[in-house]
Length: 474
Image (tube, rainbow, N blue to C red; front, top):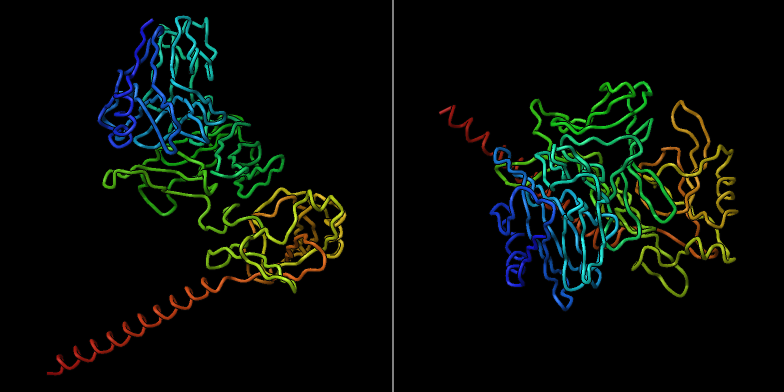
């Protein structure tokens, strides 16, 4: 077995310079890794927050398209330990990670081994195995990266035995296909919730997941109620195919462009939950979103904290608790209770918030007669924390009551939409919600400055017109 160990000096050299010099080939081990090879990184003995050590092992060998794909072995500080993972980069963008769903923590060393019988392993100290492909005995000869960014294990005939495309993370690459019931997943930092992009028979959907709760906040349905079989990312956008493998719809990369930029990948944002198509700008030497499905901050499911309201000015406002003893706005959830507390016998009532709605969908819905009945439906269910009553709008008349077990995605809307959003609160307190004085002062200052600019432009234009007219007369 060939054991290639990155010494401690080289390791720190790579950990600093590889992040800055991604295209310069630091610690490059060639275009492929054959069976019997083992590569290791030394991990610092003491924990250092923010530390990232990477050794780039190989690239796709394609110098025609900028940037290219590269494969790295990584050791990264995370939650008090060091995670060991195998990663794929497109330029400086991480597009695949072996530890995306379940991280492997190690001490002393991070080891990548392609065993003699064809199994690809990530190991720690004392040969502890934290991740593997499970390809023993399948004739695997080497690990390589394709020009599409697909990391593959192949046999002597170049037949694929394992591929990263079968294990999607939060990125879908050009040429990659996602079948029915597969999904992309992203995890916001410091949050117990996560986002998913899911492929269903009748639609594509973005979901907010919190524990066992799951609500959609964006959907795309193909025309004529056609069933979806699979998706494929092309250079002009995301293409949908039906059960007969025929193209039936497309989400383009640029609505208003005659010659849209070539799409390199689709990504589900881990902070916003937005889904975007990304193209490379040679002038800026970076990736830019050529299209995103959500265009407003207030359409994000976690734009504000729980019990926070996203206003017309894209600011977050809290539901404020006002009693004789205190008046607080420091924490949006302060003064409210969780569903667990509601189920412990706390006296509660429903508070109606005027002019607000929620971006969350797929809640438990019932056809019901009145707003009072909808409120009582939530009050009778201790796990219910909010309800949305729809009384009809325009020519369509319906009365529905949607029950939520999560207060999130609340945004300000125009009045008269025919909906009423109610949250469950402790009984006997008085509530309201307003933007903070800081936000109001910002709006006032911006308004004054805009007004002065308009006045200056009007006066300047009038003076210029009079001067030109006088010159013409002379």
